[in-house]
Image 1 (cartoon, helix red, strand yellow):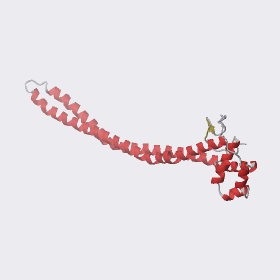
Image 2: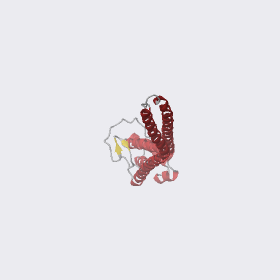
Image 3: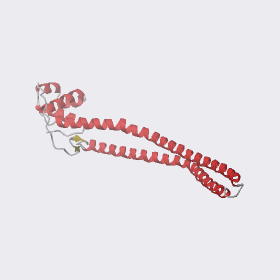
Image 4: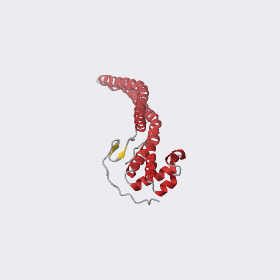
Length: 222
């Protein structure tokens, strides 16, 4: 049986489909195409979710229009009443008495303007909350569904590619194939594939390692 030895890390130049040594896409076209299409669908999904959330935000914000009108009308009326009260206040002897009704009316108009402003703030908070609520589900699918699977494949592919360049690493890949690959694929390599692996048969080890790499969409290291 071939003895498994420690593998010394050897830095390698980034290959096609890699970034700083991290494997991003598979080597084999069908797998790489599927990954690329999935990534594009995820980008479109996120973009559509953001656009929909913005649409919901803008739609709810339209409920603030009455509040804007109340604020504008109340503020304008309060200013006009205050100005009129100031002019009336200049009337000799009775100016102060005549000013009081205008001041009370101006205060009431300011209260209307404040109510309109509060309504706008409430609608703005509601619009933001609904937009975030709309984004939670689609972004959660990406962050907790697609992304972990994608990162796990990248880590596995990078490790497998590094192992494929060393004899001991190919033994490990072959052992993993023996454990995880279907029996029908193993028996195609050799009817007694386990015994051939224990003997250290190079052809069997290479075939098993290639089988495991193919499962990840990678080509052999040799």
